[in-house]
Amino acid sequence: MTLFLIGYMGSGKSTLGRRLAAQLGASFVDMDRAIEEQAGMSVSEIFAAQGEAEFRKMERQFLMQQGATETLHIVATGGGAPCQGDNMEVMNRVGRTAYLKMAPAQLLKRLGQAGREKRPLIRGMGDGELLEFITRNLALREPFYERAQLVIDCNGVPDAYIVEHIQRWLTW
Ligand code: S3P
Image (cartoon, rainbow, N blue to C red; front, side, top):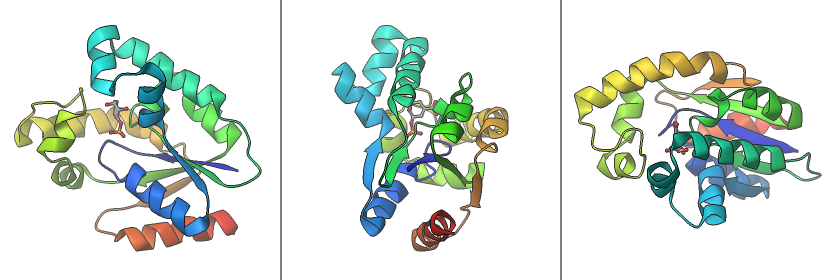
């Protein structure tokens, strides 16, 4: 079974995904890293050289390659992937989906300078500008994210609890 972790940039999809995989003996893949490996460039380089639309095609291609698996396979998706075309439906069909829901103020706190630099959509933004961007962008994206089968409120919740919550939901 494939589990897709969904959420905004900085919501902890990769960190939690790795932790969950280690705890459950599952395999793990980070969608951005897989795309980077396949393209031989970083996400920022893909945006700069080929444009966002091309990157979105690569995300779609990656998702279409994910099939039903015998054992648990965890995918940390990119923050924008669920909001393109019917990607959300594809993920809901292929596997299970969990949305790591977090408020703009908390996302801002987690997206430090280094985190902003490697993400082309928010590179170079100061705190005020970024908070405004997240608030606006998240409002557009939430209708997609909310189609996940599990929505977890992660505001101020320790990782260990979130991992346990997902684990219980998966085995329920
Ligand atoms: C993006 C999120 C990033 C990465 C790219 C675009 C987005 O992934 O795919 O920079 O549109 O939200 P993370 O959510 O892992 O930061």
